[in-house]
Length: 633
Image (cartoon, rainbow, N blue to C red; front, top):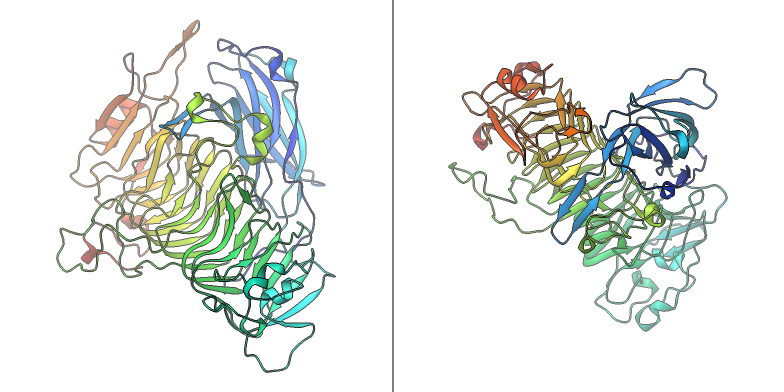
């Protein structure tokens, strides 16, 4: 079991808060205005340790406005400084028949690593050398926002004791054989199985006593003596709602391991119609989808908690792709997929075919397991989990255009009434993910204030950090460790906007695909010989930037660096110098550079960078594509 570090707190927080400025519809936005007009400030759903904000504006055509962030706990005197908000300015994400999305004129960003269940004052101050038009709202906003507490069982609910079939020892009362007999008033089998209605109420606790719970779904006339549940499917349908403060708890009693075995069925627990259900200390085994929590455009749950559980021989651990799913907390779990644990197998190619003595490389790989966790919707937290042997580790769902907007109608953004269904404020941090056929973490389809922090991502065949595409920004990748990624460290597509890479340690080449408004700071990048260039940037905007990184170019390879971007534009009365190489009219300027000095001089990027080698680490072996020279982790 992984020890849980977060303290128990009980302060509730609103899922979504917003402060409305005066309506921007009062006048059309001027694309020529250099000064900024502040508008509506939106507070994204708080998570346990992070807060997110979006500030809509007009004007600032030359993109030189900025928003300073400061914050403090309610009651403290001193203000602390947060990262400035990221400027977003009509960036487009376009992918045939899936995305045609144009971002608003806005700022967005997060305050990171706060305390759970704590109220903070947050001060946001906008400035612009070209002046501020305050007709739509003040240039300084101070708001009070609370982080969410960690979900915990409530006091005062009913406690029901559940025992496996065949248990003959002493019992604590009230006691039941099989979970559904405790959860529902009736627990018949055969044709009577649908007749039960939930006994479970908010705050109730179902204590599962040690043993294996395995439904014999191939027999029609099951009775309560053989753990009755849905006829033929073997699926536990949970239909009762808890609340954020009083979840319905299914928890190991503490007298030994609790195993719920699907015996190869498709879905073990279906909680799509049940909000604020809570699992702790359970082993889920032998099923395609262990906990199914939502289906796109149909139905899904809110407030699901899964803590200190173990998933074995599963195709998917926890899954929802319903936009109304929100505020999941999935922490301190072990997820073990069904893919071969002894071989790293590439999804897009056979990495090892040129080497002798490497057997068992099944290609193309069979999809034995898909994701440990896959979510959509706002406010999810996935933290402190161990994940091994899946196609992908932890993902947000690709989904397509956010609710309320449609790709076939041309570039758009979801209307205001759908904003509570956007995939914003999703936290993935402190996870250990190994042996992914494709990506360790995908933020595909996610929008604003995604936070991927302090994850260990090893043995990932293809791009452990992925945005294919993200559709908003910022998406933060901060302090992640990437080791043994023979397909490259980073993947992006469709001009993924607002992706931020800070303080990551990467032992692979970095070629993100296509981004816009992306920024790299203080990363270590050391290759393993998968491509000549250690760093290749493909950006559709000339204000993507990179600096203060440490590089180890691949010896004897050229080009060592590539930077591909559009030329800087002329705006209004004079030339506005934006970051990126100068160039002629038209599309992207594609260039390769043999040395760091050539790259710095030609592009203006990475002026404060240094060259490093593997000796900057303690006991980290250099990697290459030859598996005979790779240390197994």
